[in-house]
Image (tube, rainbow, N blue to C red; front, side, top):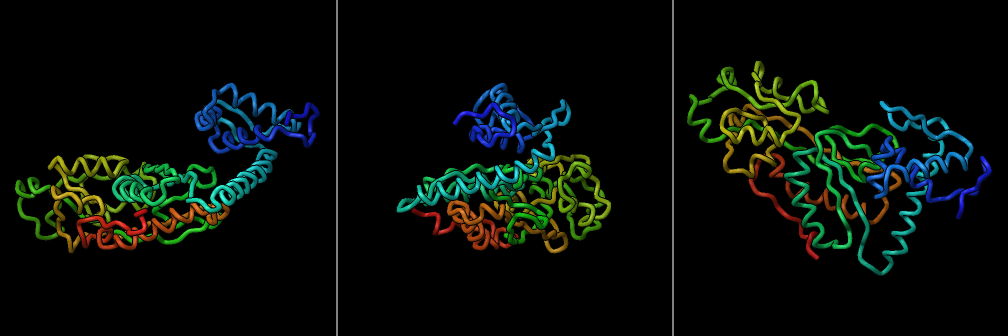
Length: 320
């Protein structure tokens, strides 16, 4: 269908709406171009065509802020976003009739949990669902469900009320860890006060994406950290060098025989993960399959997550 040359005419090129949607989510024409597999000029041209067809400005553009939706753009986004979900639902219902589940699911997660727990589990998930493709985003920051950066998110904090559904996925524990060499080279640690002269690897306080990550000072008052990072995986590797202690998730450190818990009964931090999804996507079959799988593997791996076991378990539902 060709776009209308009359401003405000309802005859639109529906493909232009897809370009509009990606620019609205990424706030960058270059970012939208990467996601769509086209060049920057194509995205800019299609957005201008849509604005001409509607006879209104959809974005305020600036070098620093990128493409920011105008009030008209915000109104259009709500409609186009709903259209996309409806098309996805219809396509899934028709395509999967009498066939195996198929489609694409993007899962956003905290970095450590994504790399050390979700990555191996979701790799096995595809044994049973070979037609579902998975994107895993293990990142040290929040992902936005509203911008469709992910379909499902695993977060440290309970999602705010809005157009999302969520559930508590699991509790997990963190403990203080060190290498055996580190402990052999220092006097025996028998109480928390003995840690006063030791060094720690930890987060950079003002760059931590969640308050839930700032547990070192509360767990070890007066702790001195001279090696800091925004990445828990970097802290894990720093601890493996045998030059510092680090508070690490048990699901990471307990699986590594090179690391030993220190004052395990005295220094225990408990946190929770939450599983969330946009309400309009939750009923899609492929989303439900991944959602239910994550809840299952979190439940059967409760001992590992809580620091009561050292090995990961696998779900029977991951088998074809």
